Image (cartoon, rainbow, N blue to C red; front, side, top):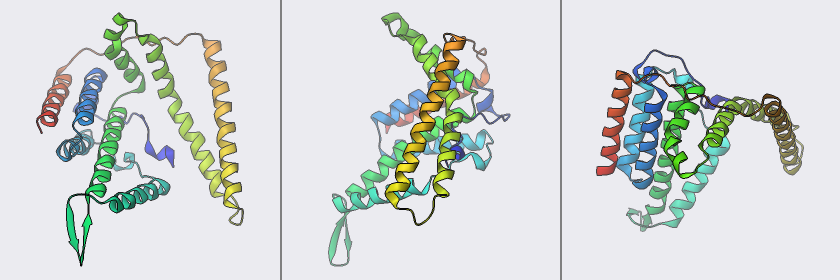
Length: 251
């Protein structure tokens, strides 16, 4: 289930976005995230969604990389939308003899739009950028904070470790999901849930122990700040990001 999300898995293609350096893509993503966070209206949400869709097309990514949300997530979203509809609020529409307020439902839809749009930007950056380049780009972006005492080296090392751990975590969750599907149908729901939680806890502790031993044997994690030279593809990505950020800020 989770492995189908292709989290931060590089998809090799020959496109403008792939040829641009990680620094330019990270800068554009940060700018769009901040712009949408401070102006989460419908037009900015549509701009971010359009950026993700057009970016996937420009990068010539296969349709198989697009995540398929699991059913529990869809069910949770549907329940929250029902509660949003029940909360009412402007605008009101006439539904038979009664007026129905759509304010809560529209607000819930906008929250989903913002959340999924930001997730789409993150996934697009991960699909078009190698994991090692992302860590280096993060270090370059955080470099000014080192002057005020922020431990940027430790932060970048933690990010690099997290990125490398994502595939392993996805495999573990896939194993747990497969185990849950093989549980006997007649077993009580509480027992099935406890079995899944126990398996997840054991797998997490085991993976954490393996990581700890590996880090202890290897020594401190050092991310080398190597970057590709700036090129015309970076200029295209940066100019596009400036235009999109300006469009979000002016709406």
